[in-house]
Structures are given as C-alpha cells and as structure tokens.
Image (tube, rainbow, N blue to C red; front, top):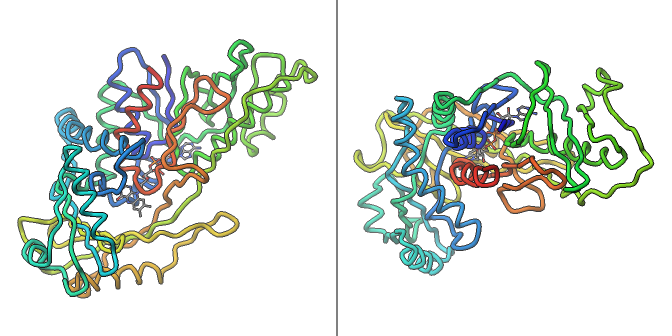
Length: 407
Ligand SMILES: Cc1cc2nc3c(=O)[nH]c(=O)nc-3n(C[C@H](O)[C@H](O)[C@H](O)COP(=O)(O)OP(=O)(O)OC[C@H]3O[C@@H](n4cnc5c(N)ncnc54)[C@H](O)[C@@H]3O)c2cc1C
C-alpha cells in the first residue's frame, strides 16, 4: 500500500517513522523545504505533559500516550541511527506568582498521583535550594514536574528522518504539491485521492497524510475544491490544480455529465492560522543554577531552556495574525519577554543575545488542537495538523493515531 505524507516537520517525520514499523507499506514523504524548516525549526521542544492542566478526555490521552512513547522512542531512534538527540530529563519547574490559584495545582498534583504520575509543590525554601538562580520575592511557590522535559526538535526530526530512511521510507525534499486527482465512488459516496502532482511529476497513492503545518490549509482547500468539483461529474476521475498551475494544465479536467446532481458529505471547513512565536538564544559567562540540576524554568508562560555551556533559549511570544491573516514579528514583544525573564531570573540581564528567531505555530480555527482525522468527503485522506503550541510534545501520539487509522 502506497502512503504519501506531505510535510516533514516533527509531525510528518514522526508519522513516517511510525508507519515505517508496519510491514507492507511503501511510504514517501515530500516537503517543499528540507526537514524541520517550519514551526519545528523554531520550537523550544518543551514537553509539558504531566504539568499541563488537562486531566481527562482526548487532550490528556494524547499527552499521556506521547510521554509514554517518548520513553521508548528516543533510545530506539538512537540505537537505530547512532545519533544523539539532546534530551533534558531534569524536568520542568513552573513558578507560581501572587494571585495565582495554588489550590488548583495542589488538586492537580493529587489527580496526577492517582493517575500514576508525579508533581511536587515547592515552597520558597525548596525553590531557593534547588534553583538558586531565581529571584523568589515575586514567587509564592513552584510546581516541579520531574517526568516532563525538553528535547531538541530539529535533531529529533532529522533523526526520525534518518531512522525512517533506514526502514525504507523515501524522502523527497524540494517538492511542493501542485495538484490532486481523485475518483468518486457512488457506493461509498466518497472521493478517493489517487494522484498528487508535483513539478517533478505525479505520485500514485493509496493513502494521503497531510502534515504540512500552516501549509495544510491550502492543501485542504485544494482537496475540498476537488471534492466539490466531483459533484458535477459522472466520470469517475477528475484532477484539479492549484490556481497557479491551473493555467498551465487547461484541459486536464474530465467532466462528462455536469447535469447529474450528486450530494457529497458536507465538507468540514478546516482552517489553520499562523500564530507567531519569537525566541532568543543567550550566552552567560557562568552557567546559572545548580550544576547538577538544570530543569526548564517556566514563569508567566516564558520558558528558560538550559542548553549547556552557559547557553539558554528564552521563548516564546504568542502573536496572533491581523485581519488579513498576516503576522509579522514585533521586536518590542521579544524585548518585553526578555525583561519578564529577567524579573524572575536576574542573571539573564548579564547575558549576551547570540541569536533571535521566529516561527509560525499552526493553530486550528474553530477546533481544539490538534486535528487528527480523516478528511470529510474522502475515503483515503487523513489530516494531522494544527498542533499549535504542542506539536513536539504530541508528535509520538499523533503518529500512533495515524497508524491506527491507516492500518
Ligand atoms: C517559537 C515556537 C516555540 C515552540 N515551542 C514548542 C515547545 O516548546 N513544545 C512543543 O511541543 N511545541 C512547540 N512549538 C509548536 C511546534 O513547533 C509546532 O506545533 C510543530 O512544530 C508543528 O509541526 P508540523 O510538523 O505540523 O509543522 P511544521 O514544522 O511547520 O512542518 C510543516 C512542513 O510542511 C511543509 N509544507 C507546507 N506546505 C507544503 C506543500 N504544499 N507541499 C510540500 N510541503 C509543504 C513545510 O515546508 C514544513 O516543512 C513552538 C512553536 C514556535 C513557533
């Protein structure tokens, strides 16, 4: 069975690796860029599972499945590829400020205990002892989550690609999707996507997985336009190209009987909007905190991620698009974020900024994140996108869900 995955960020790469463990699949992954160039390349890689406030339902199940799978996935990938994936297992320390609801954290700690997980509530003596780099006059407590952590997203994605390649997956970088063709089955009342067109030619498929981050919207629109077009066609086969390509390919469409009325299932609108995040990398002459204990620090939704050798990532801003859907990084927001980090970790004021960057998180509009589902109107198209702020965390569980749908 031929499976095509579109997109090679953390989600597409994790899906490709998971599917490569299934015998009998011929998997191809295409991306218009090299791997991990989208949101994944900007991510901090913080795995906020146990410390998230989700305690039941799908949101918690996905988190739990991911935390569990990470335990086996990383050694499995390292053994297969010989790569080393930077993985901070010192946990996450979340600072609680005056006015925040400490009771709800105590309740969460009890719930997690009953679920077999562990959270600690630290008082100021413990904070001072474990994290001497923090200024505790503005902190009333801290929540420590030893089973969460942080992983380097680009290294992980590249290692997933290397492992999947060893397992027989074919990766094609520099390939953008330009058109799709499908057939309509009256029995199923559904389209089946048959071919994907790229400028290098067409790819025949049995299953299509859309894992294209913020690019997913455009692909979904193309497929939905194709599904709509089929309503007017009796002939089983039809092809549609993106507007740019359409002019070049006039005459490709087959439309035998435009009068025949058909009803296809109502197409679910799936829109993925970009939410920008800026971050920076700092270098300090002397590393901060305890030498043997370097957890991720989270204060007011700002993360300080230790990288070793006195270097840290600080991130990330959350910037929503304007009325026309564009989002441009605002330098002042990056500076404000740094100042906030200094307010609870004063040593950062002495640090040298060695890099700044931004990325666009894929956020689904009108749906809770992420979207992992069959595309309405199609028998063989699945969507794995809209992971918003937690794509690195949720990649393993997403890959497992896609595997279940396809096999
Ligand atoms: C600053 C920042 C910090 C973050 N921190 C964290 C964090 O700490 N923890 C966490 O879990 N998450 C974090 N995230 C969120 C995380 O980065 C995303 O949820 C995740 O990377 C989404 O992965 P993806 O594979 O869906 O998308 P992407 O990484 O964007 O990959 C999509 C790929 O699809 C390709 N593509 C798009 N359209 C097409 C097309 N038509 N044809 C071919 N290829 C196409 C693109 O080239 C791209 O490579 C952060 C995000 C940002 C921006």
